Length: 109
Image (tube, rainbow, N blue to C red; front, side, top):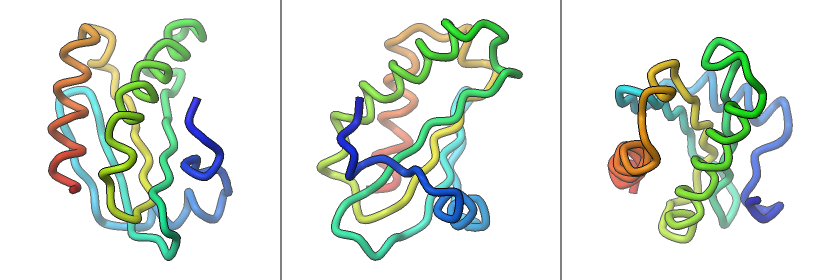
């Protein structure tokens, strides 16, 4: 679990991120982000029913993404970010997901 200060939680913050035109995409992930006025980055994860019908699989994907992003959180600039899983994530292994998320987060830095 990410520390409370690193979580994006409010509806208006989500709307700001989705209205932003800044985004990065890989084969299984989409990252939308915008700058914030805080001293730290905030992250949210979205894994919809369309990605996988089973809640256990969706929760597993969120845990994987959360775990990988923890490594990068101290290196990220002050941004609000939503990491969205795409349907293709079901065919990827942990290592492949890690590589794709690492490359996307390095582009943001």
